[in-house]
Length: 124
Image 1 (cartoon, one colour):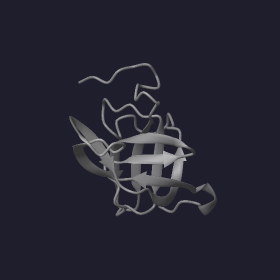
Image 2: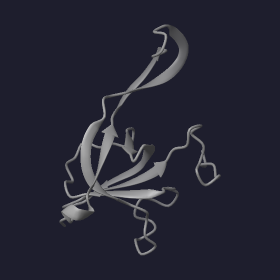
Image 3: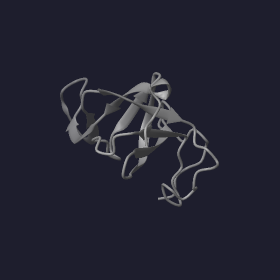
Image 4: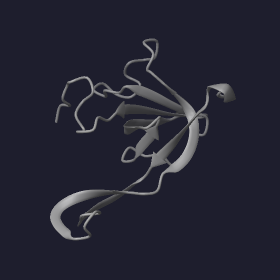
């Protein structure tokens, strides 16, 4: 599968590095886990809203997502712990599905308070 170059958009992948108990602003130990992120890595791919014509169970039965990212390189180092920065908004990666010739990623737009954009809560 090949993606048309005119449909590609630029975004950044922010890799998740782990957790620490050091506050990044003060440099002091807080005792609470704080996620740490790597430097954004520029990439290109096709980001669009999900289509009703795609198999709804492609990413799983209970995956809620707002956008779909498709890349024509299935070997790209993207995992479900990182985040995507696109058009000034952050998206959490909900599911990653590589295939023979492509990589499909389910994205969910994050709000400032990390609540669900649709007002629905995830099941534990």
